[in-house]
Figure 1 (cartoon, rainbow, N blue to C red):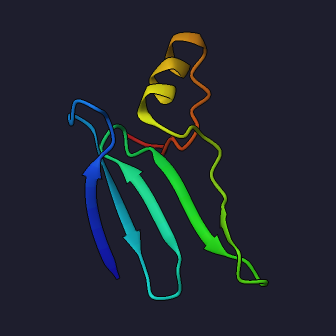
Figure 2: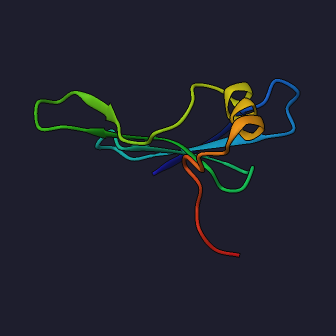
Length: 78
């Protein structure tokens, strides 16, 4: 398994961690409330599919908070 850390927000205050395995499964999660931004799995035909509802970038996630946070990718707990 590999873990990569990259900036999620343009100012670098929010990071995204990408966890991947040899089979092509990839989970992307932020240090901003542990939001899951992508979960890529390979289907039976070999096509990679993102099975998480959400937004393409941090700015769109932030904009959703001003309207009505849909809690896309949110993890539950305290």
